Image 1 (cartoon, each protein chain N blue to C red):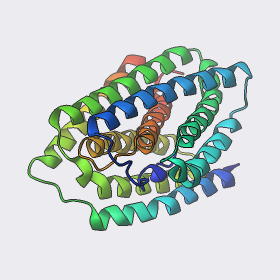
Image 2 (tube, rainbow over the protein chains, first blue to last red):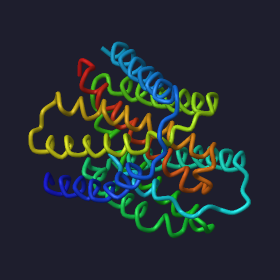
Image 3 (tube, rainbow over the protein chains, first blue to last red):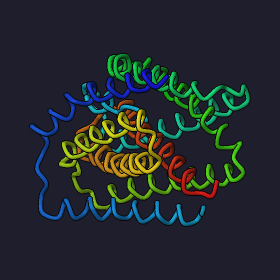
Image 4 (cartoon, helix red, strand yellow):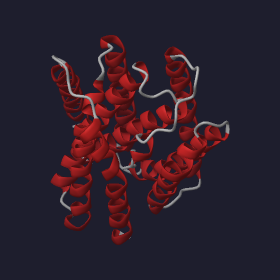
Length: 57
Length: 223
Protein backbone atom coordinates (compact mmCIF):
# COMPACT_ATOMS: atom_id res chain seq x y z
CA UNK A 1 0.00 0.00 0.00
CA UNK A 2 2.89 2.38 0.80
CA UNK A 3 4.38 1.76 -2.62
CA UNK A 4 1.03 2.46 -4.26
CA UNK A 5 0.73 5.74 -2.33
CA UNK A 6 4.28 6.67 -3.33
CA UNK A 7 3.52 5.82 -6.95
CA UNK A 8 0.46 8.08 -6.90
CA UNK A 9 2.47 10.98 -5.46
CA UNK A 10 5.25 10.51 -8.02
CA UNK A 11 2.59 10.55 -10.74
CA UNK A 12 1.23 13.80 -9.25
CA UNK A 13 4.69 15.36 -9.32
CA UNK A 14 5.32 14.28 -12.93
CA UNK A 15 1.88 15.58 -13.93
CA UNK A 16 2.39 18.93 -12.21
CA UNK A 17 5.88 19.60 -13.55
CA UNK A 18 4.79 20.91 -17.02
CA UNK A 19 2.33 23.31 -15.39
CA UNK A 20 5.04 24.49 -13.00
CA UNK A 21 7.42 25.09 -15.92
CA UNK A 22 4.78 26.86 -18.00
CA UNK A 23 3.71 29.21 -15.21
CA UNK A 24 7.32 29.89 -14.16
CA UNK A 25 8.28 30.91 -17.69
CA UNK A 26 5.09 32.54 -18.95
CA UNK A 27 3.22 33.65 -15.84
CA UNK A 28 2.61 37.39 -15.44
CA UNK A 29 4.79 39.36 -13.05
CA UNK A 30 3.33 40.82 -9.87
CA UNK A 31 2.37 44.49 -9.91
CA UNK A 32 2.79 46.94 -7.08
CA UNK A 33 1.01 45.74 -3.94
CA UNK A 34 0.08 42.35 -5.44
CA UNK A 35 2.34 40.31 -3.16
CA UNK A 36 1.15 42.26 -0.14
CA UNK A 37 -2.48 41.57 -1.03
CA UNK A 38 -1.82 37.84 -1.51
CA UNK A 39 0.25 37.53 1.69
CA UNK A 40 -2.43 39.35 3.69
CA UNK A 41 -5.03 36.79 2.59
CA UNK A 42 -2.73 33.83 3.30
CA UNK A 43 -1.77 35.19 6.72
CA UNK A 44 -5.49 35.51 7.45
CA UNK A 45 -5.96 31.84 6.55
CA UNK A 46 -3.03 30.82 8.78
CA UNK A 47 -4.45 32.80 11.71
CA UNK A 48 -7.89 31.29 11.15
CA UNK A 49 -6.49 27.73 11.11
CA UNK A 50 -4.67 28.44 14.38
CA UNK A 51 -7.97 29.64 15.84
CA UNK A 52 -9.67 26.38 14.76
CA UNK A 53 -6.84 24.34 16.32
CA UNK A 54 -7.24 26.29 19.55
CA UNK A 55 -11.01 25.64 19.46
CA UNK A 56 -10.71 21.84 19.27
CA UNK A 57 -7.93 21.49 21.85
CA UNK B 1 -4.48 15.00 -1.55
CA UNK B 2 -5.65 15.39 -5.11
CA UNK B 3 -3.66 16.59 -8.08
CA UNK B 4 -5.00 19.79 -9.53
CA UNK B 5 -2.79 19.92 -12.59
CA UNK B 6 -5.63 18.90 -14.88
CA UNK B 7 -7.52 21.97 -13.78
CA UNK B 8 -4.63 24.18 -14.72
CA UNK B 9 -4.00 23.20 -18.30
CA UNK B 10 -7.41 24.45 -19.19
CA UNK B 11 -9.63 23.50 -22.03
CA UNK B 12 -10.20 26.04 -24.76
CA UNK B 13 -12.58 28.87 -23.96
CA UNK B 14 -16.28 28.66 -24.63
CA UNK B 15 -16.87 31.52 -27.05
CA UNK B 16 -19.38 34.20 -26.23
CA UNK B 17 -19.85 33.42 -22.58
CA UNK B 18 -19.67 36.55 -20.43
CA UNK B 19 -17.43 36.70 -17.37
CA UNK B 20 -20.30 37.11 -14.93
CA UNK B 21 -22.02 34.13 -16.49
CA UNK B 22 -18.86 32.03 -16.13
CA UNK B 23 -18.60 33.01 -12.47
CA UNK B 24 -22.29 32.33 -11.82
CA UNK B 25 -22.19 28.98 -13.64
CA UNK B 26 -19.00 28.02 -11.79
CA UNK B 27 -20.52 28.71 -8.38
CA UNK B 28 -23.74 26.91 -9.32
CA UNK B 29 -21.88 23.84 -10.57
CA UNK B 30 -19.56 23.96 -7.56
CA UNK B 31 -22.53 23.95 -5.17
CA UNK B 32 -24.13 21.06 -7.04
CA UNK B 33 -20.92 18.98 -7.11
CA UNK B 34 -20.23 19.63 -3.41
CA UNK B 35 -23.79 18.53 -2.60
CA UNK B 36 -23.37 15.43 -4.75
CA UNK B 37 -20.07 14.62 -3.00
CA UNK B 38 -21.84 14.88 0.36
CA UNK B 39 -24.44 12.35 -0.85
CA UNK B 40 -21.80 9.87 -2.07
CA UNK B 41 -19.82 10.36 1.16
CA UNK B 42 -22.92 9.42 3.15
CA UNK B 43 -23.40 6.36 0.94
CA UNK B 44 -19.80 5.33 1.54
CA UNK B 45 -20.30 5.73 5.29
CA UNK B 46 -23.55 3.74 5.17
CA UNK B 47 -21.75 0.88 3.39
CA UNK B 48 -18.84 1.15 5.90
CA UNK B 49 -16.24 1.25 3.15
CA UNK B 50 -12.64 0.45 4.23
CA UNK B 51 -10.04 3.28 4.44
CA UNK B 52 -8.29 2.05 1.28
CA UNK B 53 -11.38 3.25 -0.65
CA UNK B 54 -9.98 6.77 -0.35
CA UNK B 55 -6.75 5.95 -2.18
CA UNK B 56 -8.52 4.12 -5.01
CA UNK B 57 -11.10 6.90 -5.36
CA UNK B 58 -8.36 9.52 -5.58
CA UNK B 59 -6.49 7.49 -8.23
CA UNK B 60 -9.69 7.06 -10.28
CA UNK B 61 -10.64 10.72 -9.95
CA UNK B 62 -7.11 11.83 -10.83
CA UNK B 63 -7.03 9.74 -14.00
CA UNK B 64 -10.47 11.00 -15.08
CA UNK B 65 -9.64 14.60 -14.14
CA UNK B 66 -6.30 14.64 -15.97
CA UNK B 67 -7.07 12.67 -19.10
CA UNK B 68 -10.84 12.65 -19.69
CA UNK B 69 -12.35 15.85 -18.27
CA UNK B 70 -10.24 18.31 -20.35
CA UNK B 71 -11.44 16.53 -23.52
CA UNK B 72 -15.11 16.71 -22.50
CA UNK B 73 -15.10 20.14 -20.86
CA UNK B 74 -16.52 21.87 -23.93
CA UNK B 75 -19.45 19.51 -24.28
CA UNK B 76 -22.48 18.60 -22.20
CA UNK B 77 -20.86 15.30 -21.22
CA UNK B 78 -18.30 17.35 -19.28
CA UNK B 79 -21.02 18.03 -16.70
CA UNK B 80 -21.63 14.30 -16.27
CA UNK B 81 -17.88 13.71 -16.02
CA UNK B 82 -17.37 16.31 -13.30
CA UNK B 83 -20.22 14.78 -11.30
CA UNK B 84 -18.60 11.36 -11.72
CA UNK B 85 -15.22 12.69 -10.52
CA UNK B 86 -16.59 14.61 -7.56
CA UNK B 87 -18.92 11.74 -6.65
CA UNK B 88 -15.92 9.41 -6.65
CA UNK B 89 -13.93 11.78 -4.43
CA UNK B 90 -16.92 12.10 -2.08
CA UNK B 91 -17.21 8.32 -1.91
CA UNK B 92 -13.53 8.07 -0.94
CA UNK B 93 -13.94 10.86 1.59
CA UNK B 94 -16.76 8.92 3.27
CA UNK B 95 -14.34 6.19 4.34
CA UNK B 96 -12.04 8.81 5.93
CA UNK B 97 -14.98 10.43 7.72
CA UNK B 98 -16.01 7.03 9.12
CA UNK B 99 -12.58 6.76 10.76
CA UNK B 100 -12.90 10.21 12.30
CA UNK B 101 -16.44 9.51 13.51
CA UNK B 102 -15.08 6.53 15.47
CA UNK B 103 -12.92 8.92 17.55
CA UNK B 104 -14.42 10.33 20.78
CA UNK B 105 -14.35 13.92 19.48
CA UNK B 106 -14.58 12.95 15.82
CA UNK B 107 -17.92 14.64 15.06
CA UNK B 108 -16.63 17.90 16.55
CA UNK B 109 -13.43 17.71 14.48
CA UNK B 110 -15.41 17.01 11.27
CA UNK B 111 -17.86 19.84 11.92
CA UNK B 112 -15.02 22.27 12.67
CA UNK B 113 -13.11 21.23 9.54
CA UNK B 114 -16.27 21.56 7.43
CA UNK B 115 -17.14 25.00 8.79
CA UNK B 116 -13.50 26.10 8.56
CA UNK B 117 -13.22 25.00 4.94
CA UNK B 118 -16.41 26.85 4.03
CA UNK B 119 -15.21 30.00 5.79
CA UNK B 120 -11.79 29.87 4.10
CA UNK B 121 -13.32 29.40 0.65
CA UNK B 122 -15.96 32.11 1.06
CA UNK B 123 -13.45 34.50 2.62
CA UNK B 124 -10.82 34.06 -0.11
CA UNK B 125 -13.30 34.09 -2.99
CA UNK B 126 -14.94 37.19 -1.55
CA UNK B 127 -11.52 38.80 -1.14
CA UNK B 128 -10.55 38.07 -4.76
CA UNK B 129 -13.92 39.36 -5.99
CA UNK B 130 -13.80 42.49 -3.83
CA UNK B 131 -10.21 43.49 -4.62
CA UNK B 132 -10.51 42.45 -8.31
CA UNK B 133 -6.73 42.00 -8.35
CA UNK B 134 -5.12 39.68 -10.86
CA UNK B 135 -3.56 36.93 -8.74
CA UNK B 136 -2.34 34.95 -11.75
CA UNK B 137 1.23 36.08 -10.88
CA UNK B 138 1.02 33.45 -8.11
CA UNK B 139 0.98 30.59 -10.67
CA UNK B 140 4.69 29.70 -10.68
CA UNK B 141 5.00 30.15 -6.93
CA UNK B 142 1.95 27.96 -6.21
CA UNK B 143 3.07 25.12 -8.49
CA UNK B 144 6.59 25.23 -7.04
CA UNK B 145 5.14 25.14 -3.52
CA UNK B 146 2.82 22.28 -4.41
CA UNK B 147 5.72 20.24 -5.82
CA UNK B 148 7.77 20.76 -2.65
CA UNK B 149 4.79 19.67 -0.54
CA UNK B 150 4.28 16.57 -2.68
CA UNK B 151 7.97 15.66 -2.23
CA UNK B 152 7.61 16.10 1.55
CA UNK B 153 4.44 13.97 1.52
CA UNK B 154 6.30 11.33 -0.49
CA UNK B 155 9.11 11.27 2.09
CA UNK B 156 6.60 11.05 4.92
CA UNK B 157 5.02 7.90 3.52
CA UNK B 158 8.21 6.12 4.58
CA UNK B 159 9.28 8.35 7.51
CA UNK B 160 5.78 8.46 9.11
CA UNK B 161 6.61 11.55 11.21
CA UNK B 162 3.53 13.24 12.74
CA UNK B 163 5.28 16.64 12.73
CA UNK B 164 6.02 16.35 9.01
CA UNK B 165 2.42 15.26 8.40
CA UNK B 166 1.25 18.42 10.19
CA UNK B 167 3.65 20.57 8.17
CA UNK B 168 2.49 18.99 4.89
CA UNK B 169 -1.17 19.58 5.79
CA UNK B 170 -0.47 23.18 6.78
CA UNK B 171 1.43 23.70 3.52
CA UNK B 172 -1.43 22.23 1.49
CA UNK B 173 -3.93 24.58 3.15
CA UNK B 174 -1.77 27.60 2.28
CA UNK B 175 -1.08 26.50 -1.30
CA UNK B 176 -4.74 25.59 -1.95
CA UNK B 177 -5.80 28.94 -0.45
CA UNK B 178 -3.46 30.57 -2.96
CA UNK B 179 -5.06 28.49 -5.72
CA UNK B 180 -8.52 29.77 -4.70
CA UNK B 181 -7.27 33.36 -5.14
CA UNK B 182 -5.54 32.36 -8.40
CA UNK B 183 -8.58 30.54 -9.86
CA UNK B 184 -11.14 33.14 -8.80
CA UNK B 185 -9.10 36.00 -10.24
CA UNK B 186 -8.53 34.06 -13.47
CA UNK B 187 -12.31 33.67 -13.87
CA UNK B 188 -12.78 37.38 -13.10
CA UNK B 189 -10.05 38.51 -15.49
CA UNK B 190 -11.04 36.22 -18.35
CA UNK B 191 -8.12 33.77 -17.98
CA UNK B 192 -10.59 30.94 -17.46
CA UNK B 193 -13.78 30.91 -19.49
CA UNK B 194 -14.72 27.26 -19.19
CA UNK B 195 -16.89 26.92 -16.10
CA UNK B 196 -16.49 23.14 -15.92
CA UNK B 197 -12.69 23.39 -15.60
CA UNK B 198 -13.07 26.39 -13.28
CA UNK B 199 -15.37 24.34 -11.06
CA UNK B 200 -12.93 21.43 -11.07
CA UNK B 201 -10.06 23.68 -9.94
CA UNK B 202 -12.05 25.25 -7.11
CA UNK B 203 -13.51 21.90 -6.05
CA UNK B 204 -10.03 20.37 -5.74
CA UNK B 205 -8.85 23.30 -3.63
CA UNK B 206 -11.84 22.94 -1.29
CA UNK B 207 -11.43 19.15 -1.11
CA UNK B 208 -7.71 19.39 -0.30
CA UNK B 209 -8.26 22.10 2.32
CA UNK B 210 -10.96 20.00 4.01
CA UNK B 211 -8.81 16.83 4.10
CA UNK B 212 -5.79 18.77 5.42
CA UNK B 213 -7.83 20.60 8.02
CA UNK B 214 -9.27 17.26 9.18
CA UNK B 215 -5.71 15.93 9.53
CA UNK B 216 -4.48 18.96 11.48
CA UNK B 217 -7.50 19.10 13.78
CA UNK B 218 -7.43 15.31 14.25
CA UNK B 219 -3.77 15.38 15.30
CA UNK B 220 -4.00 18.46 17.51
CA UNK B 221 -7.28 17.56 19.23
CA UNK B 222 -6.86 15.51 22.36
CA UNK B 223 -7.84 12.32 20.50
